[in-house]
Amino acid sequence: MHGFVSVSRVADRPATVRSRRCADRWTRSDGGLNVCGRKSRVDGGCVRSRRCVTMVPRMSDVDRDGGQKSPQDGDDDGVDDEKRLFNEPGMRAEDIEYVQMSSSSASSASSTEGASESALPKGRIAELPLFPLGMVLYPGANVPLHIFEMRYRRMFNVIRETDNMFGIVMYDSKKQRMASIGCSAECVKFQPLEDGRILVVNQGKQRFRVLRVLKDTPYTTALVEYINDETPNEDPSELAVGVWTGLQEVLRLSNKLYSKSLALSDALKDLAPSTERTQGENTESRFRSLESFSFGVSAILDMPVVEQQILLQTQSLSKRLGKQKELLDFATQQLAAQISIKSALGDTKKD
Image (cartoon, rainbow, N blue to C red; front, side, top):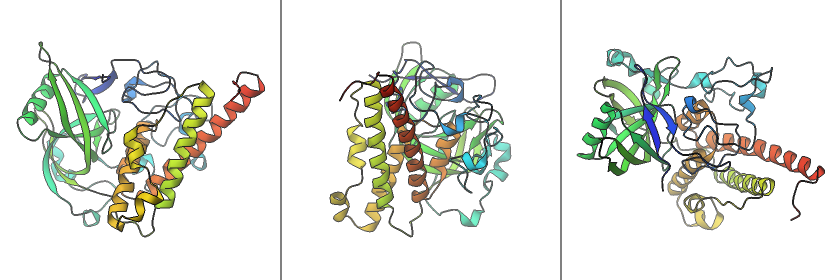
């Protein structure tokens, strides 16, 4: 049974995401594993319940005075740059590419902040209805939504008659703008209710870059270009193995700390890198498999929305995997420290 997410709209802002069912301290309402967070903030676009408790403090969540920061506070949060996990060029909050929501800005939407048109990859171009939300969708991930606003009821009824495809883009509520890099989604389950509301389940397909906003009523439609990761100069297989090993270690320590017996999903296990799996694959096939694996890992890491967007936006597989390994290494250290403290206090059960 899916934990459907309610979608609402306040004033002229795009939809916000609110959980309809409390997730336990181990899983998000979308089935993800919390490895590095705190209590969720519903208004920040997290699909988890506000009562969901996470396991490890995030480095980017605490400022010098120990206060919490907003998921979209960006760079001005009082955290020293050298203490940030997302501090290198191209992987910072200020490097996120945005476009304005209005179609009146279409002429400027074709060029993104910090990237020249000539540097853009030349992929398949399509017209796509967009759903701006306070969340990030990755290729291969599933997101259930509860649709009750009229404009989006109409959108889902329209795409149901065509190809069931639309795009989800992260929305910055403070500056009233949406990210230019999003993920296309296919509506794989459509359940209309008697009062006109709709329950839908959607699966992430492929990333895209917004080239131009075509119209903004009754809902936003844009011309988009589908993108993939750039082919790496070096084989990232060893880095991917490190991420997989780190993820399993975090789960092992988490199970020990909280006396749980949870396991990673079969879908993610199928994507996991291994020597046996890659021996028979050609370079391109292996690279695409690792790309899918990196998105599968991103989908279950609990991070601020802007950091989720950075991992979606980057077209460097090595950078994405490297950042994931940093996050998992940090989570491992924190969990090990908590286990040591509980063991010293006599609270850890004997193995």
